Image 1 (cartoon, rainbow, N blue to C red):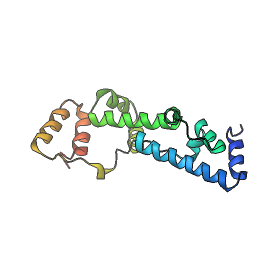
Image 2: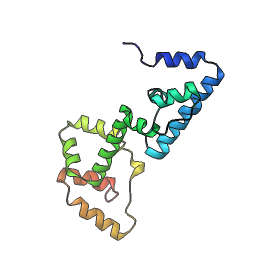
Image 3: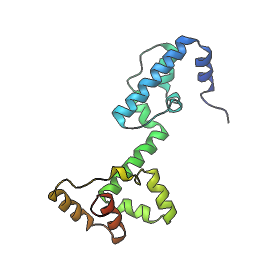
Image 4: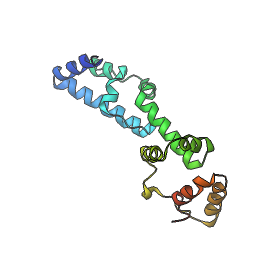
Length: 159
């Protein structure tokens, strides 16, 4: 199967310095805005799939106001958002999220945790006061026994 954006790549590469400079400016803006406004990471390959980016590059028209909607429709962005929501649900201790992971085998669970960035001990949240610790303890008792130790470690309640 051929690359659907091959023609655009050829136009940018053979279009001279001005076209390349426009492409870099448009893609840099989109990548920056996606990170700043939506909290997602894009590559130039992601941006090339956006019609408004290609049009702005080739016509020197301003970037369409709909480009943020286009970003949200990219498959990679949808997956990043889903991963972020799952991670937040797990951190909140939601039963559905934990049940989804419980269905996986142990090595799949570990791989999934790494995918979600949940194995980094540098992100450990220590309770800042007795009230915070009490809140965390109340949340702990709502979890299944298998998840309590993991969460207690993640929240800095035990070593």
